[in-house]
Image (cartoon, rainbow, N blue to C red; front, side, top):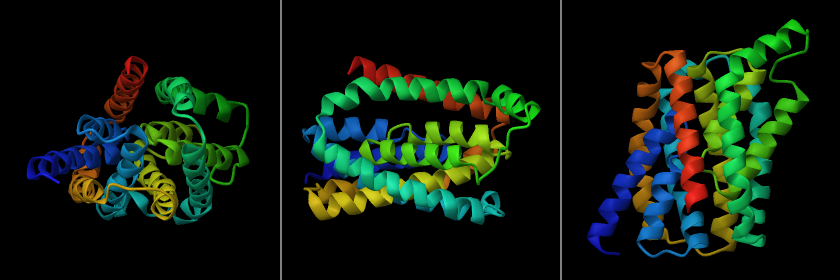
Length: 250
């Protein structure tokens, strides 16, 4: 692989790792970069999934404070993410790409709407006396479905996870974001194992992206801590809408 391509993919990995650990959607940097270098869409998608994976786990090192007290919740929800990631990877290898093109932009826009109105939804649920917490069946199912999406493509998986967690879990956004990084990482890990065992991967490109993503993952949580809740939510919505527009125009 040419040196210039390695450097560009490495830089794209840094950017994706940073964005993923703040809000998600870093794949909308690396995936188009792979396409620009001539990788076929399916190969680019699989390679990208493996490449961005180290960024999520790198970010966890910086997010230890935000993750305190969330172990029990995350152990339960991680099972859903893992199962969803496996299912999504299998669907990617079995279904035509046209299915993704039609469904994903709508899912992302719905996620953005959830993020924007999440405080009102949470208040309404509490007033009606409905339970909110990590044991909720609806939350587990929503995390499972998000894992399916993450294994299938993954761009804006973080946006959807933050929206879902914000509705059901009473935590501030930095703590929700740290939990999101764990769950997204689990879905991506499960999908990466399926891809590595069953289909072709452009390993040189994946390693270039992975090296950058691991570095970028160190930046994201630090940036996220400095954002006030309203700005945090605004960034998530803006990124999510931008992703939807890119996918609709593609």
